[in-house]
Image 1: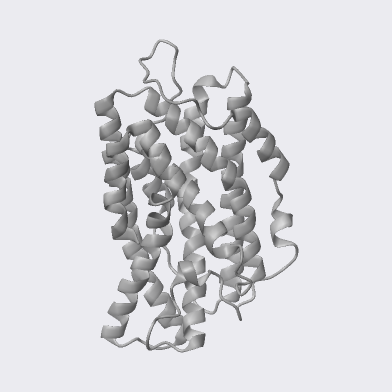
Image 2 (image 1 turned 90 degrees about the vertical axis):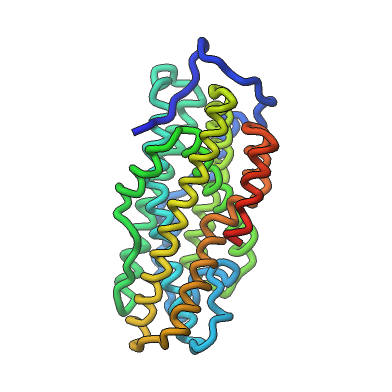
Length: 319
């Protein structure tokens, strides 16, 4: 498996603009906003009379042939899949960050401490998502299957060049920022407990996006131009791989909805719903990150204007 690495002083580097972020400042902020699982849950339960995801992410209200209650159920199925997908993603982020920091563990500087905190917080998020998945299963009437297994997905992603993986993670980190700021923050209609999860996840991911920016900068500086071009190819390959999983999840969500509402959808309606929901998930998990200004700016800074143009040319597929 290809793993990330920190640069040695004798390795060839490409000079990049001065980093926008510092490990010390990000470590201080991470310690200040750090939360416990009890802060998120607070003794509450999921309210299944309300949607879980904002409509901007779920895109269930425009579906024809479903009653309002059925659209709410589909929204909740999507919410369950949203958390499970993030759990899968964060299971490969943790080993990647640890591989990146391992060569410098003996130094004990702010970079090491910040990256170890990054990995620890991602492990905490995985735990939180599993708690919510258990709460969901306890309150939802029927099973909801998800793609996996997570370790096989992680092995496929981590088999790519470290810069490819870092770019994919950076897209995901900025994606979570867009989700909360643009869709969740002002939506008081979603379940308060689910909203609390998304808020607390956002608080820590705000630091992770900046730490991963520093990782991308370090990895890109250690690559020759042709290697950076291949890394961009690998990043796009990871996106295509995840897009295949999204298509499978859309099919699984249709099955879960039919189980929950106790009826089989007409074939044409079912196909249309799966296509529409797949595109909604493509935006949620791919497009919203690929088009994030901070992600695109980092691609341009570290890989060049042509690399940014390639990402911008692909992004409309996922909007």
